[in-house]
Length: 216
Image 1 (cartoon, helix red, strand yellow):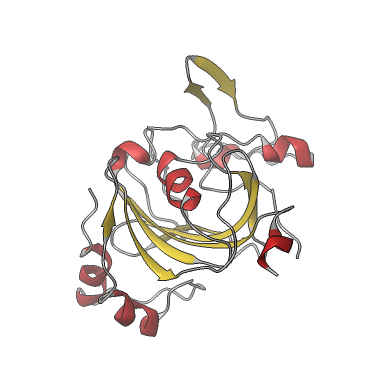
Image 2 (cartoon, rainbow, N blue to C red; image 1 turned 180 degrees about the vertical axis):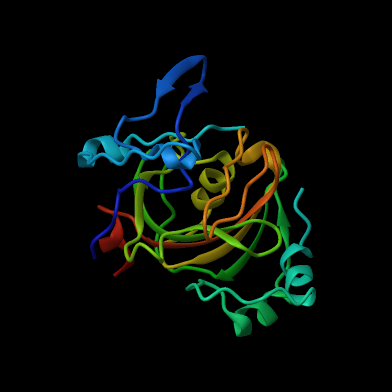
């Protein structure tokens, strides 16, 4: 199964500090994520794309149901959790971690959990609390490939994936401190993400390269 390591809107430009060390984002990322007035797209190598770095910084379980109840117009975009799934999710218990991250398992996988630093291939749909999508691997047609637990994605996504099993699907309610400290600007078809605001990720852990054979 192929996976994509191409730039994603969930990966804002800039530098992030990790353990006191400044890590610069590869030059190949599109500046349209942060700068609304300038867009530059450059091709990048597989290695550069694997080095994408997010800026790292309580969601209520009622955010998305409230959005649907408000009668917001449906988006014609693929989702990991459709209407039937949303109904079933209402009866799934919420898990809250010490960091404030909350999640519900849509489907528990049968494969291995990813060790810290391992590459994972995951599909995701990223939403603001109203349910509007601001980024999605489904629209790109390939799962996203990155090293989990290595600061290459926001803290809440790293933490949520580390306790999943391959083949599993989960909804993450990510609080502001574990999301986007600088926020993301709006764009046509994409809502604004305010700095340090909560976000919701539906994520599917497709496979772990090198460990997928352990599932057999």
